[in-house]
Image (cartoon, rainbow, N blue to C red; front, side):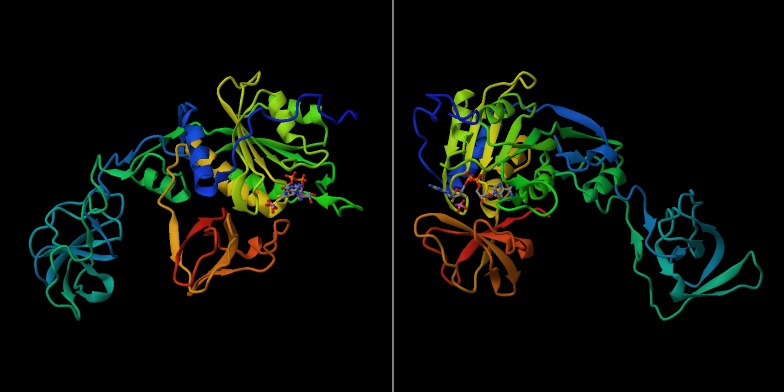
Length: 415
Ligand SMILES: Nc1nc2c(c(=O)[nH]1)N[C@H]1C(S)=C(S)[C@@H](COP(=O)(O)OP(=O)(O)OC[C@H]3O[C@@H](n4cnc5c(N)ncnc54)[C@H](O)[C@@H]3O)O[C@H]1N2
Ligand code: MOO
């Protein structure tokens, strides 16, 4: 027996787990995350990007906070022509405006009390006998409607109004909205920590692969996907095809979620199952009725030295598109749920053409979205990424295929 081989007896779990249907596998992954308590953190806005809101975001002020001019021009009171006096710039407090008067105003400036509308610069002409005084005449506009070109206070939201639900991913737009309504810090879920282990002696991380070797496609592909799930990626490393190395890498990983690639099948150096059994892991999913990717698995790991809570391992198959299928089926649902993100309603489109499926299993198909719905891309074999790199989404084709006119679910492929 080589040093790479598992010990006698460590040949897998005692009770084989039945192959899960694809929707069931996703649900199991989400449910597994529910067992993990998830504390909250307060972060400055510039640290919060990519996290997930722990509670609803409620406005701390009215938005806008005051009646605001939507245009450069004049704030006017009553019907024109108007006598002209002064100006209001953004950021200044205006004086009240009496009926029949107008004052020059900038976009974003606070409307003077008493003003009824804003006349745009291009809609007015000023007779100005002196620099201090003049008369403003409207050109080409009839009676100004009350509130014309005024953004009324609280038009967007009222103080205390809920703007976003708990579980919303913090995007750049969320940061902008939070800042606009008064936040300096956000309360977010503490992200789950993840470590990526890339298995396989044949996998090289740089340069042109030599004879019999392949370049690691999954480290570069999966790191951004895992990060975009709301998780904190602790790092990734290559693990050689050696039973003890793999077992220890899994056992002592500091992460709450370990994601492995390769080693899921039954090859002579596919040690993942035996390493899990030897580590006291409990398989929650061991194979999924999906193509590609059917050897994917999900296991619950006992606590490690550094991580004392429940830990999980997602085993992705080594074939790159199969690993992608495992990511969208098990890894992302687990990590989204751990981050407090909602499952979402799912996105469905009608397919104009029939999509061929697997006789008994769900098929995940890289597609381009056109006016006719999803169009399958060529080069969609389990070992290929050429189709995926051009894809807008993965179409979920039910067992037996989808007929023309049928609705199919689309899974987003993170950017
Ligand atoms: N007897 C059986 N053999 C296989 C089965 C089966 O059911 N019975 N399933 C096949 C399917 S389907 C898949 S998928 C693969 C899964 O294999 P593993 O998860 O054990 O992965 P490996 O054997 O380590 O690698 C498979 C393939 O992928 C290449 N690879 C691995 N890692 C990377 C990487 N990081 N970047 C690029 N390419 C990678 C590796 O070189 C192999 O070509 O098992 C089938 N066999
Ligand atoms: O199902 Mo495998 O996952 O075909 O490549």
